[in-house]
Length: 116
Length: 116
DNA sequence: TGGTTATTCAACCCTTTGGTTGACGATCGC
DNA sequence: GCGATCGTCAACCAAAGGGTTGAATAACCA
Image (cartoon, rainbow over all chains, first blue to last red; front, side, top):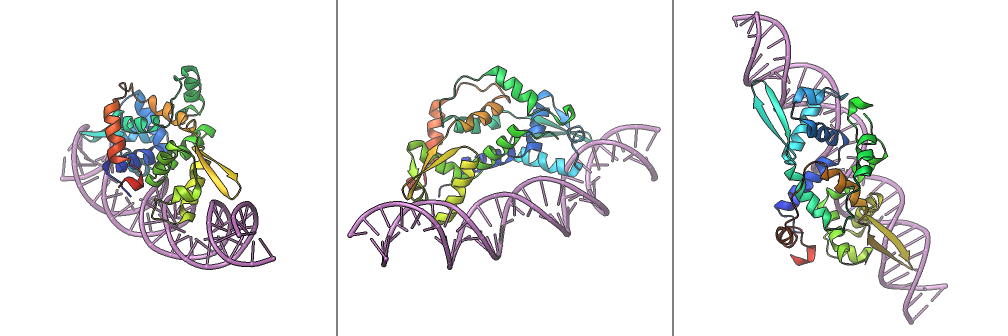
């Protein structure tokens, strides 16, 4: 089997996206850059666990981390999703996005932890 | 944490896509519907393993299977990717797709097993 | 200097995943 | 009916994944 570097990239991106905690983190970072501690705050799990999740997201290229002083700032890197999105788009001509449905979707199902 | 039905769906779709064997299967089915045995043929793994992969793809809604006689035909169901694609598209304004780059990508990195 | 805050590391645990093999049920051709 | 073929099921295994806790590192503050 051919598994080139791009396959590796798709592996890491898709498996990073497969976890709901990590998707919630990405949704939070969509709003603004955040420190690790602040990312962790709404979740009912240890800081170490969140740190691991951030490592996985960073390995996938979905976020970057920059240390300023004590604080590590996490930043969304939307380009990494592009490869995966393009790959997926080969599987069908998607109708133009229904923005109303998407808004309902974001508000109903993908809301951030604190909005429960 | 809120993990609604859509989150579950994203879980299953993204984790189905995270495996290179399953992505290769999807690429094969992009060409045409296929019997399970024919799907398995190019891979260096058991039929049972491929059968499991097909089950995972079917659970994610990415393919459907229809039994006709002895043979089970597998069919791509591109709609299931739509939810995931829409979710991903919230993470950036993607530039219009570069079709040349995409073609190189498909030919170089995501080729089917037998094209090696 | 010493204490607090921010983050990671290391070791561990349990569950899930991706593979194997061998047996089994269904269906075809003869 | 009989033997070959199609596909799944069940049991098993090693590796990876997601979580924990406690110690370590680094930077700020006083």
